Length: 150
Image (cartoon, rainbow, N blue to C red):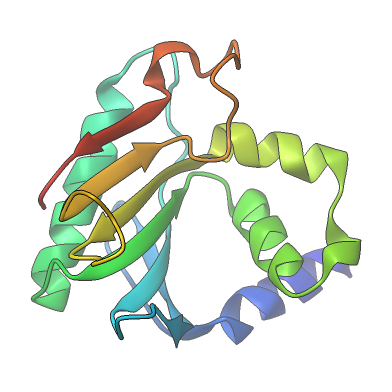
């Protein structure tokens, strides 16, 4: 029953969804303060023993920018469907917060992209593991943000 509810919740938050061979993107019904669209992107599970996953994330962001015909958007990238469902469930329901879900966010919320956001210091930025603590042993050196224009 919980899986059905999370699945339904995922589509409640998405106005439209499209997929490619290596990702599925869900449009958030809420816009950023500047009117740009926000998305949730689900990619296949990544291997954290190699930093090659960062190129995978950037490749997906570039593909999305081409498909949308703009770099002005925000995207939160996950590599686990259950973690994405958990994140969406907690947006409007603080009672849904659970320690296991919170730990899952540390390793499966891979990146947060902000493109042309007037509230950020860089016009194009991607933060890796935005929910993780800098001391997280699994994340290691992957934690942090960098300029990236798709």
